[in-house]
Amino acid sequence: MSVSYQATQDHVGMVRRLRRGINGLGARCRCCFCETSFWKFSKYRGGWEAVSSYLRELDWVSSEFDHFWCPFCRSHDRERHLKYFFDALDFWRRFEGAVVLHLAPEKHLGRCIESCGPERYLQGDLVPVRETIEVVDVTDIHEEDDSFDVVLCNHVLEHVPEDAKALGELFRVLKPGGVAILQTPFAAKLGKTRERDPEVTTEAQCLEFYGQEDHVRLYGTDLMDRIGAAGFELDLQTHDAVLPELDCGVAGVSRNERLILARKA
Ligand SMILES: [Zn+2]
Figure 1 (cartoon, rainbow, N blue to C red):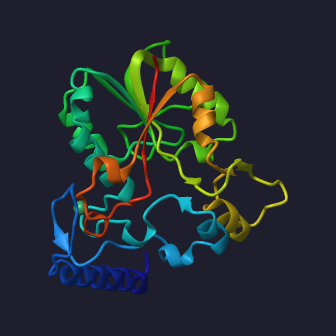
Figure 2 (figure 1 turned 180 degrees about the vertical axis):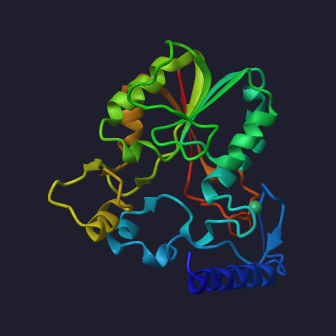
C-alpha cells in the first residue's frame, strides 16, 4: 500500500467521521437497532431521484432509498421495518425454541432472532459474506421436508432465475403450521411479471428496467399468485394497518412495503 493511498484513505475516514458526528447532533431520525438519534439516514445510490422514471411510474415497491442506511450501525430500511412489524405483531415469540432458516440474513435482524433462543438457527446464502453463514442454494436446500418453523427469505427471489423452484423448496422445508417471510420488491402498477429480456445486457439497462444489475425480473402484482402457486397461504399485512402511529421518515422505513407472510397449512 503506497503512502499516498493510505493518506487518502485516512482523509476519507476522517471526513466520514466528521459528517457522522455532525449528523449525530440532530434528533429528527432514530434507528431502532442501535437506538441512536440523528439528522438523516444515508441514501442508497443517490436515493429515489436516481431510480428510473420507468420504475417510478410503475410504483415500484422496493427499499426506502432516501432513508436507507443508519449512519451509525449500518442497519438498512428493510430490516428496521421487519423489526417494527415483529414488535407490533408479537412475532418474536415465534423464534423461541424454534427451528429457523434465514436466507441472505440481515445482520441486525439476525442478532435479534438469536437473542430469542431458537433451538436451531441456520443462516444461509449462495455466497456467504460472514463466517456464521453457510452455503445454501435456495433452489436446492439440503434439509429434510417439514424442518423449519420459520423461514426468512427477503429480497432474494428477484435474483433467482428459477424462482418457482426456490418457492417450492421453501414450502417443502417449512413445517405445517410454519410461516415464511418473503419480502420481495414488485411493481404495484404492473400486473404481470416481466422476466429479464435477453436483449437487455448493459448494467444501465438492467438498472432502468429491473432496478439492480443482478435482478433477473421485475415482479408485478402476480408475485402473490406465484407465491400461492407453491402451496402457501398468503397473509399480507400493510404498514398502515400494523404500524399506523409510526412516522416512516423518523424510522427510515417505506410506508408502501407490506409484510408478506406465507403460511403452510
Ligand atoms: Zn443504527
